[in-house]
Amino acid sequence: MSPHSRVASGLRLRTAIGLGAVASSLSRALRRGDGQVIGGRVVLSACPDAFGRLTARRHVTFVSATNGKTTTTRLLAAALRTAGPIVTNLSGANMPAGMVSVLARTPDSQTPAVFEADETYLPGLLAQTPSATVVLGNLTRDQLDRVGEVAMVARRWRTAFADHPALAAVANADDPHVVWAASVLPDVVWVGAGQPWRADAACCPECGAVLRFDDTDWSCGCGLRRPEPTWWLDGDHVAGPSGRYRLDLALPGRANRANAVLALAAAARRGVTPERALAAFREVASVGGRYQVREYAGRRLRLLLGKNPAGWVEMFDVLAPAPAPVIIAINARAADGRDPSWLWDVPFERLAGRLVVATGERCHDLAVRLLYAGVRHVVAADLAAPWPQELGDAGSPGGPPLDLVATYTAFRDWLRRTGGDTDVR
Ligand SMILES: [Zn+2]
Image (tube, rainbow, N blue to C red; front, top):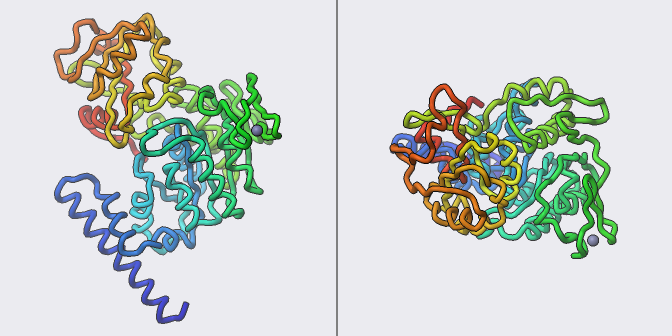
């Protein structure tokens, strides 16, 4: 690039960032949101290679998966902060515009970035950051109308990884699609994070034959098999090359322990010891409002996100045990996936013995599913007070909170209703 065109191109990036800042503040002034995504979109339309330019001098880690990417990003960011400043995206802003908006605040910085990346956007992002680190969790069915079939996403990942052999990867050895995609890379740290939901990996992504699974292993006749992990989840512990450590997280459930093992392995790659990473993880009690207990119309609600079958399979162990009732809020807007047929893949039969309050815009779809599952339920399209009387005094002050599991946009509505996203990042 000639000195003249370098100056012109630097000017273009700075102008784009200026325009983006104007768009963000307009959006905030008009109370249309925090303005991050619109600001990033304006930067990208004025300077399409802004992402690559803004990351040219930084190390970038992308965390991608169908489930757990927000939490894993949050845990990894907490661990890496113990070694110095980092930049990261807010939960939900996991497409390029959200990331560009974060980067544009410090355009010349070398501060490392840790980004949650939407699984469909990951390949495009890697084209601009060919020596990034990728942390890969799982691939399962979710928003089928937008994301598409799992096999297709895996194929796109594999093609992108093959095109960028300088990538470093930390990847879940228990997800056959993730293994198949990442195994084209020369530098992978495998993590035994587990994968209780297997319905999306019945067949081998390499040859199409039926995969053989046992408790801790999987393999195919064609040679694709579970790689030997460097780090693995072992009950409440994580084990790896430097020893065995108690996780002892503030976040509940097996899925979060799996997220923590991935984050720990990624942090170790970046030079953060397991002891320091775990101490940082234990400070994280809520992610984007999830697991927080909020008060609403005289009841205490614990807010949980349940957006697809793989997430729901892990949810049953997080819920207060039966006969505690549970509220389930189902929407099917664009960000939830407009097709709620995934409800039929969730083993809601496991809610037998407790009352379910079906709410949200698609509460009737859920009610039909619960009817077939033989689960006692009431439908309350709008859950404003008065509460359904079947709930009795569940969630009343002084007792345990009432669990409320919501799809993405329903969760966002409940956050707003109960006081907004009060997470500190
Ligand atoms: Zn095979």
